[in-house]
Length: 493
Ligand SMILES: Cc1cc2nc3c(=O)[nH]c(=O)nc-3n(C[C@H](O)[C@H](O)[C@H](O)COP(=O)(O)OP(=O)(O)OC[C@H]3O[C@@H](n4cnc5c(N)ncnc54)[C@H](O)[C@@H]3O)c2cc1C
Image 1 (cartoon, rainbow, N blue to C red):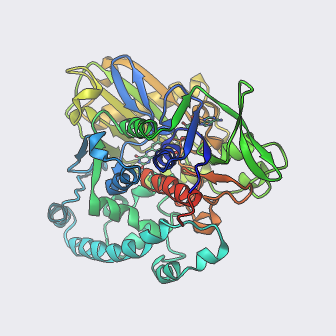
Image 2 (image 1 turned 90 degrees about the vertical axis):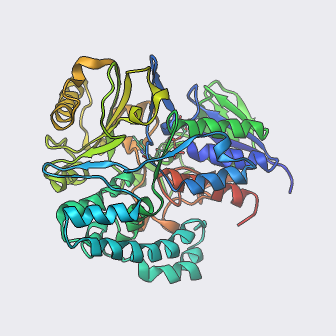
């Protein structure tokens, strides 16, 4: 196999995955990252002595990450210290708390105590969804660059198990009778930035994956994964140029030939991989007229995920609160409808609070803590103006909820460092199209062959990795996208 020069735009999880694998296979890899650090939405945020993850905090299917490191000739555990979480998280409803565990005996007992009778539904969930997962997941590991690939024997075999036309929430109704229990097994649609009432039933594999394989923390934060991937890329001979913004992808006769940086430097490459947010890249990195199928006018008509309002709080106090907890809105469905359909901010909102300091002493000084707060909100199609007034009001609403519903009732008095990210920051500072933090939606017409292809269909010598391409927008699927594109470039698939 002859060595190619591969230019990768973006050092997010997708770009780093393909970079470390391709460098390990002897290709000349150069990753161009506009920020001064690697990781993208999976980078660390440092505020004084406190360390936060910008985005991902739930690591699932760690075995996929392990496989990616092995493909690059390395061992994950030599770079990252992983800690399984049990319980995985706390789900706080107004009148009840649930502590989901991937220990099936524990979980079954909890369901039997709190929701008598529903433990049989849990048994059925594990059995049926295990079957679905084993049929479906291998299909997600393959590229879908041709229409024929959408009719592959594997996919045809999986088709009857996709529960087409059914939502995640409807599917969970076949296992559980209790409303809160249904929410406990469907809120995971939010990982895709979707509503459980719209998210296809096929995604029941996400709650299944959690309950089957558990949720891990990485000591120091999940950003350590990106740091480790960058280290491996360099050890394998790749180059990472931070602070190097790509202004344009150089295209001749509809084939990529390299990139031009914001400083005017032009770099030739045999292959260009785009890890920058897909919607942003097709609108900003190509000369007008090159992109047709995904032109800005067509793209805006696609379904995109919600956005998030984020608080990163460095506190001079430590609280005995769970590592992950979700404080559900009193009326969760109304909250989701505000986010996904009405495109307005809810007063009765759901708030995710991550208090990783209970597990990890490395992210804050002794007796202090680093608390991360995520509130799902509409993406920027809402036209909400994220000015100082909106930010101030939203911040107070969120802090009120945390103070009222957790033991962190004196939280405000202990904030010594603070950072806020709004949907407009996601769009303007992080180059995320319409601030849709979890990318293109995962409705069936935007999946598999119908999602932007790993081998980009509009330009030759150009590949996509990350949440905007196949298979999808969570870390495990993003790692898969990096692997799929790397394999395609090497002619392996
Ligand atoms: C708040 C939040 C919470 C999340 N939580 C989870 C979770 O718990 N678990 C999970 O599995 N997933 C989660 N995700 C989803 C997903 O895992 C992350 O968003 C992930 O970081 C996306 O990776 P990516 O490779 O697609 O892109 P990104 O991380 O966005 O990387 C793209 C990179 O491209 C760079 N770039 C952009 N434009 C240019 C340019 N012109 N030139 C050079 N570089 C450029 C960017 O700076 C960035 O570094 C979360 C996402 C967010 C935002």
